[in-house]
Length: 435
Image (cartoon, rainbow, N blue to C red; front, side, top):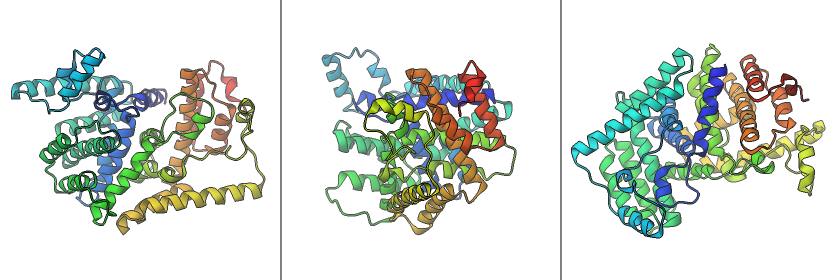
């Protein structure tokens, strides 16, 4: 369990790592690698669901395809031309000119570039996975190698979805900032997609961002694109708990869901029970999508003192309410989130709308053991992140994080995981007894 925890701590780096391509384009609120992985994984599932693909495999592959960036850097096609940048205004002007054209290299240069990138990323991947149990290490590394080399249908499709997510994000940044070379990106997209589903998706993106008509989406793919655009907002919505305790640059909802999904998968398989891992992954990815419209909700909403100086004392207690107060708060929260979930999925094809709605309701009600497990993993990811914030920002994880976790988590494996957190983050074990 110690090595698995170390792995989860390492991938937290991807929540803070900004994608290099957007930094080059001077995008202020650019997405993190974790945020990119979150939406790309959902896109792989939804766009690939009727192609006869192994959805569990494609979900796992999408979640791990960029994990190597924990120990290496993100790469752009422009890197060989940008290596001399110094940040001066003159240099920025040079970069702007470079970005106006797609970089061209000889076949030999391209081959060498691909070879060096693969070797560098493979070494980073092996370093990240080195201490995991052998079976997990081999499974994840094989998925990564499959994605890189395109051995399976799932890998080849996921590779194109990865590029499709980049294309969509680029068009969104173009619409917001105008710094992306829109026509250049469109030409690139038209050339790289050969799968019929991704070709249709690319055309839907073009229609949305390049045509002057602003009519409501009518075609099936247009409605699916609209859903992807909406959940893309989770890349910029901060988790409210960290905001309340004053964390600088707090994680987003998308970044949180990214690690919940990986933790639920790895820990779910560790239990050695007959879990439906595909369902676990889908529940984890969709459990917070309602926050697109309602934002994050905490147990302290409505009871915070006006004076912020009084907040720390409150955060050291888990909020207690009467049965009637609990009932009213639960009904109100459920109503707001349910309305948000319905609004988000309203225009999706009926089968997809029913599936996503069912997964979200399952998480809230705990109708299946997979959903109950994900709910407890969600609590563990929240606690782990609080402890990481305490270490990085010198802001202690308030006792309420521990109290809530101890009251809500009863799965035997996750109780062991919580005990491992104590060993990792506290020198004195008695600090765990904070209730």
